[in-house]
Image 1 (cartoon, rainbow, N blue to C red):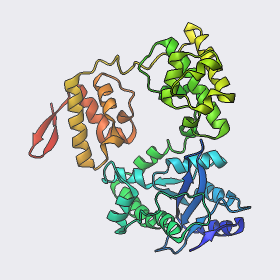
Image 2: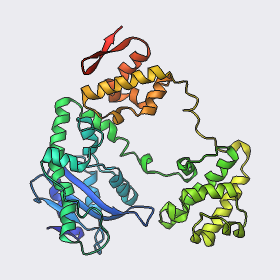
Image 3: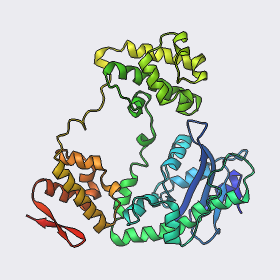
Length: 385
């Protein structure tokens, strides 16, 4: 099995890959003990069969540079094919500020091509490539060397089957005229904003029962401190302190080291040193926050005057459209967006782009009373009024 451990060999493979229309890509990484994913393995395959033209790249090998790979990513004459690309792209963006272009994500394509909402790689391997995936090495320490042959075989299968899956889905998209739909979806994946974490907005991910501005001001400062400390130290957020400890801190509002010692949920490491000092400073900033700068919870959904009957009709319409188009419902519109449309909001993704073609145009007509819905056996049809 070909494992690349030198920059020279990687450059040679990438140069050969440029002679083809596409290359399949996957990664193995570790993130349990770090804030940022640690890249441990890159799998690449050019068009072919079996393990032909497929390699494993060891980014942990001494002296290797991944710049030839990044040059390949920048070559817009070669499509870079991934499955569920988001985490892989985040790694490459953080490591080298590069996105693979053009990009093709088989998970997104499968959801557009009628494979349902759970278009997992194993499902596509079984249904399209008529193969199987050995799961025995799924939970493994990819940072440990040497890799076992079983691990290498498992990793390589993530790009060898992907070739046939890509060719099938690309042809299906071309046949159905939906290539543009997938391209629209992938724009978000290649937007740096998707991977940019603002510490001052981290509080919005913390679930709280108390939503008073003063309480949220302390939560905001604590969450921002945790985010910055985790990034700078490259450790998981929960290694600084967990969400339940954050809520306890915001409720208790400790002002001294002694106060920290009386808390129940705070990790021992957070009761002293830089984390403890950061906690106390964050609490102080939150308590001294001027009223006009205090955060407010997002109550936009609470204020919606939802017409429940119309919302139910939109759900029926969406189900009808997904059945007729084969596009996964969650890719078109989540349930909360249907409620928003029923409440009169019109700046929703479901009403723009390809979604408007599939669902949004008729959704607006339904809201305006221009069409109705009628049962016809096992199907629901749109009726002009």
